[in-house]
Each structure stands twice: as structure tokens, then as C-alpha cells.
Amino acid sequence: MSGHYSAQQRRALNQVWNAAGIYGFPPLFLSLGPDGRPDLYLNTIVGCVRKWYDEVEPERLFQAWAGDRRQALLDDLAWLALESAAFALELPVRPLLAELRRAHAETFFDQEQTLSRQEWMAKNQLSYTMQAARWRAVLERRPPVMTPYEKRLSIALDLAGLEGDDLFPAILEVFSRFRLFNGRTRPPSALRLRLTGRLAGMMSRLMPTEIVHTDVVDLDRIAGAGKGGAADPRRAVLRLKEDAADRQYIESCFGPSLLPARELGLAEQALCAGIHLGCRLWYTAGLPNPERAKNPEARRIAEQALLQAERNRAAFSADAVLYRNAILRLTERIQNCLQVHSEAETETARRGRLDSSRVWRAAVLGDERVFQREEPSNRPGFAVDLLLDASASRLHCQEAVAAQGYILAESLTRCGVPVRVSGFCSLRGYTVLRVLKDFGDQSRGVFRYFASGWNRDGLALRAAGTLLEPPPDRRRILLVLTDASPSDSRRIPPGGEYPLGHDYDGAPAVKDAAREVRALERRGVRVGAVFMGPTANVPAAESIYGQSLARIRTMDQLAGAAGTLIQREIRELEG
Image (tube, rainbow, N blue to C red; front, side, top):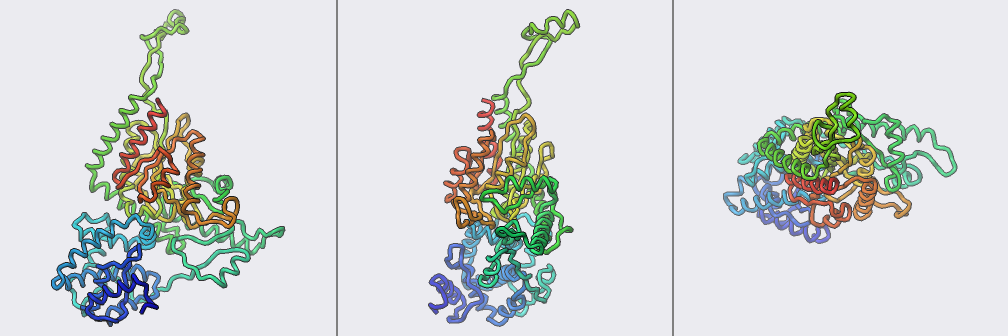
């Protein structure tokens, strides 16, 4: 056995066997946490399923959809159903199981900030929502915001008390009723690696490949440009088709570009250089359009984006009184700071300090406004850009991000401060800047926020400095919501500091983001950040943003922390 299982896996095996009361059988599943340690509660449930339902029916159930494109999702949902049934049967003979269940539920939410969990959530949004609903119920917390479909599915997956003869047909019936699996296996689409040159030939023969995020592998932006030779026209046509497919995919997920194709191309030429060579940009304020999606993946993301907007609005409405009070408090704080630090404006008046240069107007024109009077300025001399990390690391708190973004935007608007709210992420090599609320727009546009993909922070900051232009005659404050963990599937190309190339993450990505923040500051932009992430990322956050950094522990602190940063910047700008 030691030749087949690691030490941690052997511990998990023993947990399964102890719960089953049978030893030596190979279990269907083993549960290991993100740190590789066995999950005692889930392994106990695996053993209880064997104890109460034997091995034939569970194995037949999971074999029903083996090889299906949704196999991972179906496995997760099936285990939720089995967990509810096995827990109800085992609890009377194992009372401590209730405490194990609560501990597992608490651990589930404690691990939301780990990278492995973020990647898992990115691939299984529905699975995450269903599990969050189950474990919130165990902890007697309010359920997450769910669509009507998700609410019905969550209820249907609770099959406590069903016997074996009824349980497994019930699971298949639930999957059929909710259009998850109809009894016919749908194999996943073949993976296409889009490489060029010698590397493409070598990789296609030698290297098995797995794509984890919704991205493509594309090592050369210019197809067929060999040394001293002309491009292969067939390859150029293929590249054009691939680029067009990627653009269509991004457009269906995020909406049309705000820039004409030529202007966007010029922006890419200027900005996608250096370690971002080969990347693309998409600058949009549009809505996702599932109808334009040409493949299931793009359609799924577009549909999820529209559903997430509904969740965001519903979550805000559920606590509307609390949020409105927060808006009033933050508005008062910012307004008081503006009044203290506002600059006086001089205007002509009928009384005040005599303006000798205008005395003649009284005698010649009968104009009594020959005096000057100073009045406090009601026009803030700056604008605020709020840039929200919209990568998969925010999947678990999208409703909170949207609500806090709305609170901040509405408070600033009420104070007469121009504010724009945008989200950024990267998919398929495209760094996407999506304007949710532009200057002059109503704040409710922030509820269109949704999270997906990766975050190439350096390119997002570089693009924000150029594409997100402030109003005329306004100084600019740029506030970024970040976890200080820039990461992208598109590698840094070979050259310069990285002669062999490098993954865009870790120290190189942090250094790149810090470099772009310094470049913005040299251009007169005041840059600050609200950091929410693990303690291990604090040094990276400080390296990128310096002293203009506020750390929050929960997302409901975002608006207050951002308000504090804005007050600090007001004192610097107006002082």
C-alpha cells in the first residue's frame, strides 16, 4: 500500500475505514484539504456512505457520468446529497459527528482566501454556491444570495433520511430536473494548444497539457514572422481567425469595446510592451451578451455575469437600511473634510473689499459689483477612480464588493466629487478594464460587478493611467482594491530581466505592479490601495503601494477604509 498512497493519503484511508467499520477496500474518494492534510469529516462521510449504502450503488452512481464534461461539478453535488443522507443516518450512533460537521463548515469559510480555493471556485461557481449554502445552514448563518434556480437546487440536494433504494434514483432525478445530467454522457471538447514555430511541434508530440483557467496558450503574438523570412500566409490566416475568436469571446463576456479597433490597436502597441508583450487589452463599459456567445464557455460566463448582477442588487436590497446609513455617515465624513480643506474662491460682489480696477464700472456702466468677496469653494478640485480587482479571488465576496463600491461611489457623488468605478481582470491573454460607473452615471451601475479569471495588475495599472482619463482641470486619485497577489496565465516573454521568460506571479509580478504605481505617481496621480488578503501578502502590498495603504479584514470595511484614504489624499491635495 505504501507504494500507492502518500502518508497523508494513508491517514485519510484509515479515517474512511474507521467510519465504515470495514478495512482494506479502496474507497471511491479521499478528501484532502488545500494543505494536503486529510479532511476528517468528509472522509468519515465517505466511510458512512459505504457503511449504510454498500459499494455497488454509489459506484454505479458516479460511473453514470464518468467522462462527462461536468463530471467534477456532478461529483461535488452528488457528495452534497450523499452527505445529507449519510449524516442523518449516522448521527444517532455517532453524536460527535455534529461537532465534526460544524468544524468542517467553519474551515470551509476560513480557507476562502487560499489560492487553491480561489482556483477551485473559478472552475466550480455553482458547486461553491451550493456548498456555501449547506455550510452556512450548518453554522446557522444567513444563506448566501442565490438565484431562484440555485435556491431550489440547494433545497433539492438535501436528501436526509432517504434509504438506499430511494436515494440514488433521487439524485439522478434532481440532476435531470435541474438540467445538469440527463443520463447521457457529454465528453469534454478537445483541447487545442495554439503554439507556433518549432516549440509547437515539439510540445504537441511530447507534452501532455491541462488548462486550469479559461485561457489559451499563445507564445507569439505575430504569427509566422521567422528570421529573415516572410510569414506563412496560411499561418497568418489561422492566427487572424484565432484572434477574431478570442475577441468575440471577450466581447460576449464583457461587452463591446469603448474604443474603435484602430485606437484599441494603437493603445495595445503602446501599452502591451516589455514584460507584457503578447498581451491584449479590452476597454469596455458594456453588458455581457450570452446571445453573441459562440461557445458554451463564453455563454456560461455571460449568463453568470447577468445572474451575479441580480445577486448583487438582491443582497443590497436585503440590507438597504444598513447600507443607506453607511452612505450618510461616509458622506458626512468626506463633506466635513472637504469644507475644512477647501480653497476659497474670489468673486465680484456688491459689498466686500473694493476692487480698484472695477471702480470705473460704477460711474460709466452703473455696475455696483465693484467689490471682491471670498467664498468657500464647493467644487472639489479632484476626481476619484476606484479600480476593483475582479479576478477569481473575489468570487466568494462579489455581493459585498458591489455593495461597498456602491456606498463609496454614492457618497462621493453626493459630495460633488466626480467618481468612476471600474473592474479589472484578465482572460485569454486580454487584460480587461470594465467601466461600471462613469463620471456622471448613476451609482447603481456598480451592481454589474462580477469576478472571473486572473489579474495582471501591472498592465491593468498601466492601462488605467492611459485609458481612464480624468475630467478636465481635475487632479486624480486612483484607489485600488487588491489582494497584492498579481497572477496571470500569460507568461512574461523571454528578454531583458528574464532571458528565459517567467511566470507572471510572485516577485516579478509584484515588482511590475510597483513599477507601474511609481510611474503613475510621477505623472501626478495619487495612488492608494485597500488591501484584503492573507498576512503573507502584506509585504507585497507595502512594496507596491507604500504608505498609501489601508488593510481590511472583511469586505464590509471597504467603503470606510477607502473613505479614510480619500480624506488623507484631500488633506495632501488641498493642504
